[in-house]
Length: 155
Image (cartoon, rainbow, N blue to C red; front, top):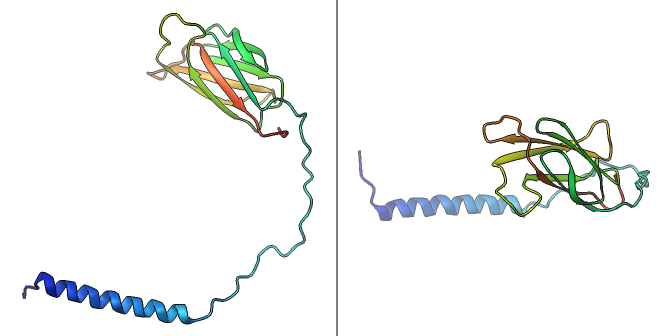
C-alpha cells in the first residue's frame, strides 16, 4: 500500500473538481428547453362567498369551572366534562387558527402545570373545543386562555 502525501491528495481533488466543472459547463452550453404549462385552461373567477365580516381576532379567558372571566367576541363557555371545555364566539371560526395555554384568570396563586389542546367544534361552527391535561396526561380541570384569529372576511 502506497502512502499519498497531503499535497498529492489535494492535486487529485483539484483535478477531479476541474473535470466536474468542465462537464457541467458543457451541459450548461446547451439551450434550456421551454417548460410546458400543465394548466392550459382559462382562469375561472372564484365562487367563494365572504362570511359576515366579523371580528378577526377573538379571545377568551376561562376558569376551571368553565366560566367566561373575560374575552373579546366570546359569546359563551361551558365545561363539558373534566378537562373538556367549549368556547363559542360571535362568528364562524372554522377557518381560523386556535391557540390555548393553561393559565389563571386573575393575579393570585400559580397556574397549574398543564397543557391544552384545541380543535374546532364539529357541531358548532362558531365553537372551539379545548382539552386540558396535566403533565402525566390525565384530564384536569384548569383555567386557560384561548386566542382565535380568522382570515379577513372568510369563515
